[in-house]
Length: 464
View (cartoon, rainbow, N blue to C red):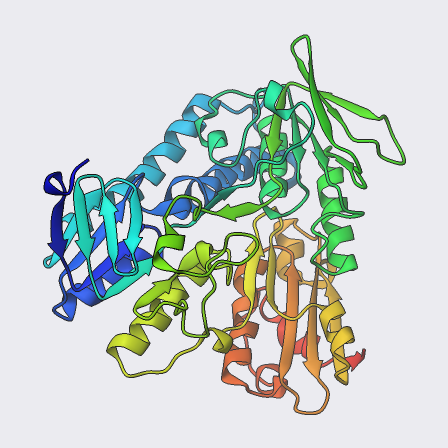
């Protein structure tokens, strides 16, 4: 393509990627009177809307409905006939909810004044020049929000078999006979329980000695027990994974210390991590620094090493969640438009694992507190002693909180149990307020709830 064929268009700001941070930032910048170019090569809404949070949690809702129907007799409810999943209808529901969200993002940007949408792959030509097809865009402010994708490992034989990732799982409208999930962390475990409840035989393979090894031992062990109780096979210490085809089966070699050396399944889901979509952006031509994993290096306010260029969301390696990406937008907007010096270091780690029951996490783990050398207190309570959990017939899991023994601030918490993903926010709010735990301990929560046990939990702290 010659220079004469390339149209140059100047803007006040360019946003590369219409994931969680991009559209929100476009609205703020446009409202401030800036001309904004937003570039998207795929589907509007990014991972969350299309292959992540919204569609997977919609599928989990279907799986939970099936599970409750199977347990109907426990509640004195009669269900005539076998309960089964109609996977075509499950997918249709998921597609409708995800599609509505995606369309909402796209239509809102199309209607946004001062905003021009460019469809295609953006590549840097220079620090403040980006080419998209036949268009050359220039701006003094450029925001990279390109997200990430599933890691595809180089296991022997993987290139010879059909396999699924979290993205391609979105097209599944049938019930796998035996789903082998390689990856015993958050994504893999959610799909494992989901498809077990839909009716598949499921085996989870994990290379580490235990599931979700970033969590505390007690959390990891409890989640394994929850999954095994539902009939999910768990294989850890899979030291040398290899894959081959055998007739209609996919055979996964695991070389585990205990159990059969191979697992025969009908389908394979690879869920071993994520990588940033920074491969083909031309970052080297812009002089933008990346780390050894391909993540764009940013400072405490999301600025890259190149003045006037920021990186937000999964591609900066400073968070792997929708909420961290949106918080990235808030930090950038506050600094640029509100004269409010917000920073990455102000935020507290928080996330959830959406198995059933869910795990809500905030702050430090018990192991991290022990390593820190802080003098700390710990409180723990099983869900069997939470009235709301007993009433709902959902007593698996426990609550755990850690407190600084000197300044009485909450250091971290793990709520594994019914409503844990919501209950943990009461603790997270106290952490952001830097209030002593006694404020929450002396509160009067509503009965009957899971949250009402937080003051009790905090009233029974022991030295760690």
